[in-house]
Amino acid sequence: MASDRAAGGVRSTYLPTNVGIPEGRNVGAREVHGDYLFFFDDDATIPRDDVLARLVEVVRTRPRAALCQPGLTDPETGAAPRRWVPRLRVRPGEDQGGQVASFSEGVVLVRRDAFREAGGWPGQFFFGHEGIELAWQLVEHGWTLWYDPGIQVHHPYTEAARHEIYYRTNARNRVWVARRNLPVPLVPVYLGTWTALTLARVRDKDALRVWFRGFAEGVREPAGPRRPISWRTVRELSRAGRPPVI
Image (cartoon, rainbow, N blue to C red; front, side, top):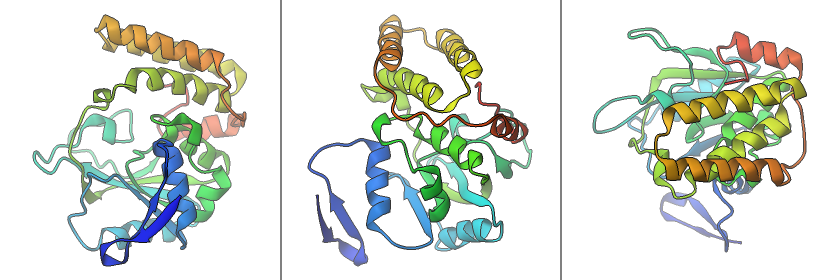
């Protein structure tokens, strides 16, 4: 790994192999200093120069807030796709800000000590669902998650399924998330729910075959260290709007 200086005083870090998105973020977090970490997809843009200060203020003024996700909108259409809104139910015109149980990994500001306490991103996931584990572990350690759609960041809308590995890692990492984090009785409930949702949503037979191969890989391959969340955390996640079975 090597580092150099880029324009504007930005330091870049080079890795000789592709370690995947979550582990790449972990590497970046270790390379910088400060009380807050800002994870930011390379195709996103910040429309105002006070965005970071406002995100920090949300976290700073709430002692147990681990992170704040801004509102994400497509710069061309102004739309906020459903998968970028960290709530199960969203009504038109509803104030969506406040405490949540999940977040979008692509653009989020995280308190460093909370990130470290929760164990960072699950590096072995490579692509997909790393935010689920981090969210659950943050709540397990007594932190809360916040969403402020009034703080806007632009992110072009693209379909995650455009990646060749999407269906494989989507299924594998769902299994790993459950195996690593859930109380044993909830593992089959979580996996059964997502299997049913996948069968309802995905009509492409080839994609389903890849998904089920990924699911089998998740069952067969080592999932990494197990850190099951408590039933208290299950209740907290449910109260925040997303029980850990969906």
